[in-house]
Amino acid sequence: MAKKRKKTNKKTARKAVKKKGLFSKDKFTLILRKFFVFLILFVVSFGLYSISVKEFWINLFVLSSLIFGVLSLTFLIIILISYFFKILK
Image (cartoon, rainbow, N blue to C red; front, side, top):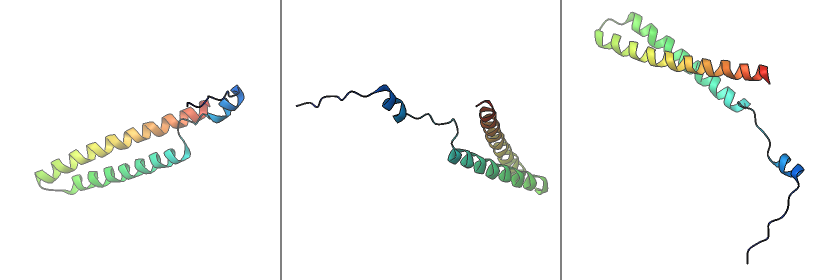
């Protein structure tokens, strides 16, 4: 036998569904931590590129610095967007 569905008030239904912000504090700290990690990796790989002598190492460090630079720039854009949404809120 199937159970009957209970009627709910609109007020209780609204209280049950709470809107979360676009970026919670945990997600924001995670994004900030990843930004700093990729920024440090970018600086290290760019530094190793500038002191390396062999062509293989130069190419490797250029490629890694480009990848880490783009990733850190992406996280910086995400951080700026989250600040922008906090200001508008």
